[in-house]
Length: 235
Ligand code: SF4
Image 1 (spheres, rainbow, N blue to C red):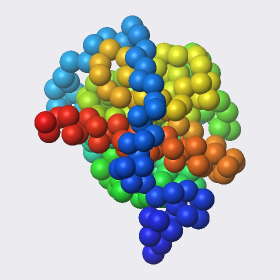
Image 2 (image 1 turned 120 degrees about the horizontal axis):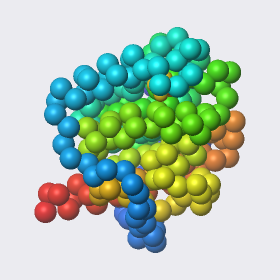
Image 3 (image 1 turned 60 degrees about the vertical axis):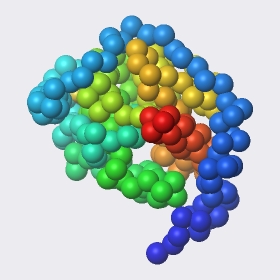
Image 4 (image 1 turned 90 degrees about the vertical axis):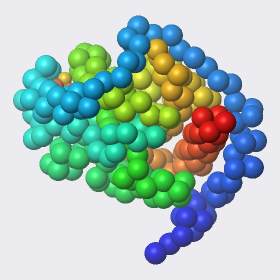
């Protein structure tokens, strides 16, 4: 089995260290985005099962007619890390699980390199049903489905959110900027104080491997912010 350093070297990247990461974050601008998302009060434990049931039965948009199954998300519902992608692909649609295809394998390797296990994060998508032929989601589909994601954030209350790809970043931040404009700094999830870092979607990295170095920079930024939050909580 390859080591974390080997994975990173294969991608032409430098292993993460706290001292190096601190330098990265010191130059970043921390940005808060205003929003109309309601403030995040605690959701009772029963709320999670109820939310899963609502998603499983959802017919709010036309994607319910073409999906095989809904993809609610996977992982620890009390995870410190929430990773958000765009929508299920063909394999995710078949299995009902997020990020199980080639993009998921790449995501797992990136997590491994960052000393994060897949089962200690929660992974979800903005859309819970697959758009046919893997087309981009329509705005009305995102608008209809994204309330489920906001409910998930509300329940999980992670310490950090990694928004992977344009649709996740724009839905979570209520923004319309490009990935290039949004990455490279720490945002705040609207209506509460959860730090949010924007990066590329793993499926994009499969098509454009040259973007892996920038993705690693984003991951280092997220790791550093997570460490800062954890340290401040521990006094
Ligand atoms: S994509 Fe979202 S809103 Fe549309 S049917 Fe699936 S769960 Fe419901």
